[in-house]
Each structure stands twice: as structure tokens, then as C-alpha cells.
Image (cartoon, rainbow, N blue to C red; front, side, top):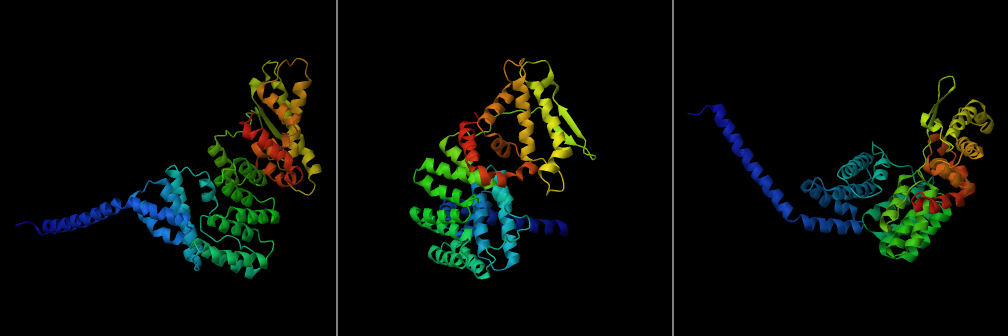
Length: 404
């Protein structure tokens, strides 16, 4: 006679195998129809029926847990579902899930260029974004419109977006999302009208430029779309969505996008007392007649800015920061020293490229777009206001030419 514990074990094992057989059978059955599920889910996403797409995509990622594309689509659909949710706690949970799906999509190698922006654009706690408008009625209309949009109810969404814009004529996203409705309807002419209205409301915001490029690309108007992606990028060059848009255009057209290769062989740090520590690569000073010795002026110029010049230039700012005029003066000092020395026969490649960029009037644009830090980035808006043409030229003449 078998011990009772052993009989109990066998009984549990039989039950477990029975359960496993049922589970395996379910998975096999599901696997057999996975292509159909994908087809339906993708079609629902195209129709902006996010709420309906969620349960299908959930089944698909269980069956194909390493599918980067399906995790990406599920993250997008969950965001659409969140737009339909009135309960704040549930909305947060859906956004957290969406963020996690985007993270999985990235881990599995999704090709979408905006994946980093999607992850970083969602708070880790899933909290709500800022209100669309200080006008409560306009904000309420936008929330209602977003819910309709995520259900694929385009006519109802358009009506609410337009009502929101009537209540708040400066409501950028109302005009922008009207363009999206017409984009989904395939009415590219009307989409362009509404995207242009958004641009007119705020020409220094990247989104409408970027969104308006999509229908242009669909129509094969590659050059016009390129101009829109460029405007989006120079409007907000530190915005990952704007960067992703330009990168996507480059991939589609086979264009090599790059900044010029310039090596700054010196580093400047400041101690607690404000004294500068200049670390200069010794190779730059080793007897070459290529102007490399001129990098010594870079560190001394920045030290002067830290000690006294910043306070005089920015009297309203209490603490020092690395600024655009400081970096530009330091780099121009290197160019001036290297080119004024008669012993220099041929400039090294980095200084030669800096001189070329400076002679073209694009040094500040290069600094702001190619090598900014947090301090320099604070000067971008003021520079954009007066020099949008130079920023545009830098992207067209340098970045789109592979940095040459």
C-alpha cells in the first residue's frame, strides 16, 4: 500500500498535468489564430479604435512575449484607453502599463525612432498631464474630444476640438488635433489647414510641424516634408520627438545625418572656491605645426568667464553657468590663436572645421545644437528668436550633409 503522502502527490500531479494539458491546448489554439488577431489588432489601431485593440494586443503579447512591435502597439493602445478613463487611479495604472510596454518594446529592439520619447514622456507614476487650457470649459471639451478620438469617433471628436478652440482661440492642441482628425479621414488638404493654424498659434512649438510632415510623406512630397521636420527640430532641438522625426526622415530617404567631427581636447572644471582646473591633452602641445597649441586659450577664456565675465554679461542671474557666449568666445579664441601663428602650416582637422563653421556664421548654431550642456541650452530660446535662419542653415548645410 502506498503511503498517503505519496498518493496525495500523485493526485496533485495528475491534476497539474490535466491543467497543463488544458493550458497548452489553449495556447496552441490561440497560436493557430495569432495571425488573425494581429491583422484585426493592427486594423483597429489604424482606425484609432484603441479601446477595442487592447484585449487583442494583450493576447498577442502573451503568445509572442518578445514581439517588439506588439509591445509598442499595446503601449499606444493603453494610452488611448487611458484617455477614455474617468477614474484618476485607473488612468494612472493604464499609463504605467503603457510605459512598461514601451520599455519592453525597446528591450526587444523596436525600430520606432520615437521610442525613447514615448518612455520619457510618460511620468513613472502615470500622473495626468497639465490641463489643456486654463479655461475649464475648453479643457473639458478637449478631454471629451480625446475620448471620442481614441474610440475612432472622428466626427464627434472634431466637433469637440473645434468647440474647445472657439472657447480658447489660443489653444494650440485643439487646432493640432483637428488636423489629426482630418489626417485620419484621409483629407490631407484640410489636415494641412488645421496644422497651419496650430503653427500660427505657436510657431516655436515642434509638434504641428512634425505632424504636418506625415501626410506630406504619404503624398510623396519628400522635400516639403523635410522642411517641416527641420522646422520641428530647430523649434525644439532638445525634444526627443523632434529629433526622432528628423531621424525618421533621414532613414526613409537614405540621408546620412551627422554633426561635424570636432574634438575639443581640453576640459574645464571649477572647484568649490571657483578656481579653474584645466585638463589639456598633452598631444595638442607636442610640437606639431597644426595649431593644436591654441587649445590652451580655450581653458583660460572659460576661467575668465567663470571669475568675472558671466556676472557682468548676465547680471540678473545669481549663479554662474556655462553659457553660449562663453563657449563661442572660447572657441573663437582658439581659431584666432591658431590662424595668427605663422608657424602653423596646416590647421588640424578640428580647428579647420571650427574655422569653416565660424566663417559661415554658424558657430553659435553648432554649439547650441551639437554640443550643448544644461547651461548652454538655457540660451537657446533667445537665440532662436533672432536667428532662426542660422539654425535652419546649420541643419540644412551641415547636418543633412553628414557633418561635412
